[in-house]
Length: 350
Image (tube, rainbow, N blue to C red; front, top):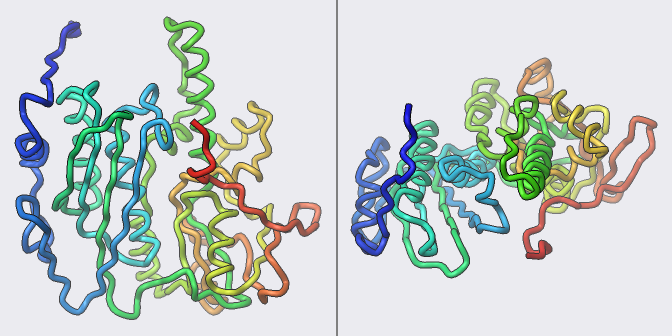
C-alpha cells in the first residue's frame, strides 16, 4: 500500500472553538441512564438517585507527563482517560461520565487532535463511560490535557484511604514496576534515535512494559471482582506514584504502620530482566516506579480465605500500630524505613 506523503492537514483556525468541539465529539453516544444532558449545554445534568457521586480530575502536560517523540496521540488520549478512571475505581466506585479539556498550540493540525480523540473514544467505549463535556483553548507550551471523571457508588460501599486497621492485610493487584521500565526503554531509544535517526529499534522483547507505559489499563475488573468475592477493602488507593508513596498515604490517613515484604512484591519477568539490563534494583523500581495504575488496598484478615489463590490479588504485607512505623522487610529479614521516592511532578525540572 502506497503511503500518502502529503496527508491532509486542516488548520484548526478554519473551524473555531465550537465547530472544533462539534467535529470531535459528534460521534459520542449516550449509554448511561444517569446522563440527562451531555455535551451541548453549559453543564452536564446527572441523576444518581440514591447513589453517591465520585469525581476525580487529572492534568497531563507535554514535557512533564508525556513525550510526543514516542507517545502516539491515540495512545495518549487513551491513557489520559485511564489515569482518571483509575481514581474512581480506587474508591470502589464505577465510572460513568468524563469531561475532557485540552489546551493546544498551533503546531497541531486537526488530524492530530482527531488521533487524540480516537484514543479517548476507544477508552470511553471499553470502560463504558459517557464523554459529557469539556473545554478547548490555545496553549503556548504544547499540549495540555485535563480529564475529569465522575462515578457512582452505593452509599456505604465507598472505600477511603482512612479505613485501614492494625493487622489488616496489604494487597496489590496485578504487577508493578512495568510502566517505569517501559519508560526507561523508550527514553534510551529516543537518545539512540537522536544519534542515528535512520535506526529502527527492535522493541519486541519489551512489548509488555512499553504497553504498560504507553497504554495502561485501569482496574475496573477489580471493583467487580471484590463485589463477587464479597470483600470490601478497609482502605484503597491507585498506584500512580509508586507503591512507597501510596502505602505512606494509606498509613498517614489511617494512622497505622506497615510491614511490607520485599519477597512478596509481584514482578513480571520482563521487568526483572529489563532491570538487570539497565543495572537497576527491581525492588526499588517496584516501590518507586509509578504509573502502573494497579490498586493498593487493605483488607481484614477475616477476608483472606476469599482472596487466597486469586491471580489478580497479591498479599504483600500487613498493617501495624502507628508507633511501629512503616517498614520494608527485606529478603534478609531486615527492616528498612519506607521513604516516598515516587513521582512528584513539582520536583521535575524542565
